[in-house]
Image 1 (cartoon, rainbow, N blue to C red):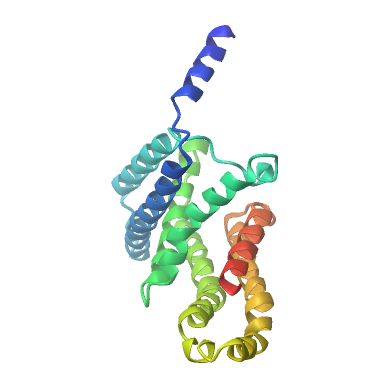
Image 2 (cartoon, helix red, strand yellow; image 1 turned 60 degrees about the vertical axis):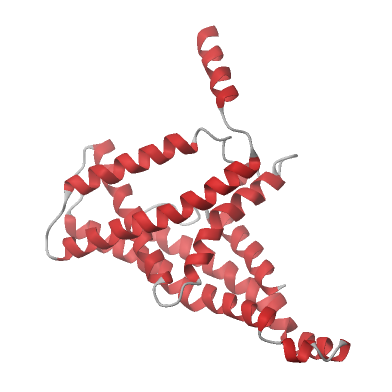
Length: 248
């Protein structure tokens, strides 16, 4: 027991506790994951439709995920949503959340290809999770089920991002950079802008982004057979926070 305790303390000491370095790592790994899983998802779905399943690619993806997990664990432990509101945790939790979400919102903002890329990345995430489950349980999920479940998982991401999140982001960008004419007219122009847009940007848009995150989580939980409310509170909080930032 003493040796195990010593190993545990040594592991803690060796971790990187620099908040800024972890923030940068979260952004970089987020972009990397979207690109890699997007390519993986596209390849697996395309091959799966014609009845082919490249197991070697699965093995490579599992190795990449494991390498990323090991590197991620060299940083201080992630703060779980359940612990976010404990004393001293909230600031780091917000930084963690922002670093994680920046790559997603940046990808959504890319015209034409951004949201489809997120959908393919989601499909890739789900596919590799099904591969992991098969390896752990000894089961053999059919290729058809992997194709259908992963396509549905990615589609849930696409639908809610396209029709809820993206319009919120566009209105936010337009409000910041597309209304200079009225803002230059002084206080009256600001008042008119506020009266015209306050309800939409301060109330409706935060609710839309909250709904986007919540509905995506619910849909993906149903598709994967997990409890409907799993991670729902975290998603709703995140959606409400970023929706408020965009709107306000």
